Length: 124
Image 1 (cartoon, rainbow, N blue to C red):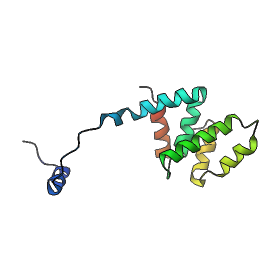
Image 2 (cartoon, one colour; image 1 turned 180 degrees about the vertical axis):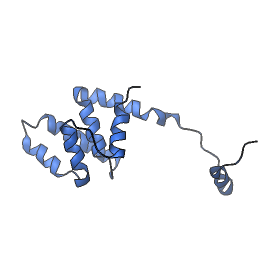
Image 3 (cartoon, rainbow, N blue to C red; image 1 turned 60 degrees about the horizontal axis):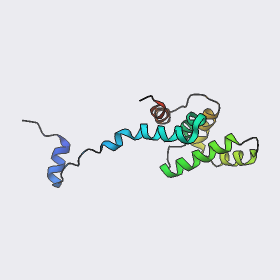
Image 4 (cartoon, rainbow, N blue to C red; image 1 turned 60 degrees about the vertical axis):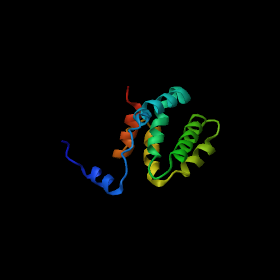
């Protein structure tokens, strides 16, 4: 007979049935990587690094939009340097160091940020 775990005991107290596993979540990194590669072609790794750099303390939607704007402005920086500078100035101070490291092709610092980027770049 299986021994009851703490989560089993909590469910019994709350009379909550365990939820079936959502296997779609297991494919999130692969699906995200495929989409990023499709959208950003040769700049996909830059997008991943900037996405990871700007991920702490903001929603996924805002993170994606900010990263997309930064990559687009970076690619077009020779045509419109003011836009790129304005977007960099709007980065959170906590994000800015890693955004600059991304643009320089340097490794990201911080365990959350670097692991997030590594997971998105990982080969399936």
